[in-house]
Image (tube, rainbow, N blue to C red; front, side, top):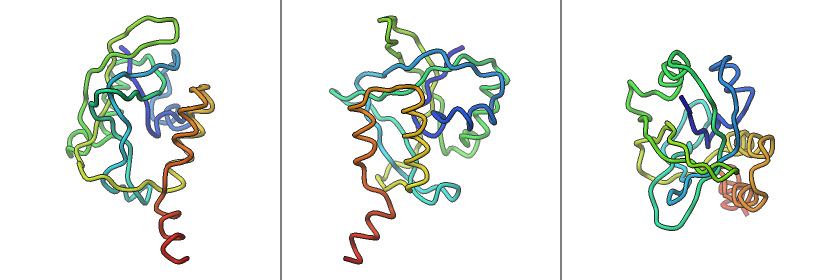
Length: 155
């Protein structure tokens, strides 16, 4: 089965730790969704990524091939049982033009927040590793973080 990672699971190191047998297939995009940062993660000290339907945006990430055991592990890491994230099926558009149904996770926090520099950099590192479009990486880089907001409030 295929899984679409757009948040911290873009990190190959993180995915290797979580699901050693997962295999990155290709970078891909999900159309008519946008990336949002919501909630608060104790681990990341800020908001975390989710995707929400929209009319004109797209979210880039990577498609991994994984087995049922790995999907169960991801459910644990994503907090499915605690209702932090829920599985969702979306269609990814691969670089070769193929459209592939995939599983991804969307969180249920609702309220927009800011992410931490650490979380943001983890996602950017993954985006660079998988050679996501430069324009998309620049959008990620330009996003405000908890730390940058705190710095602005001091100035």
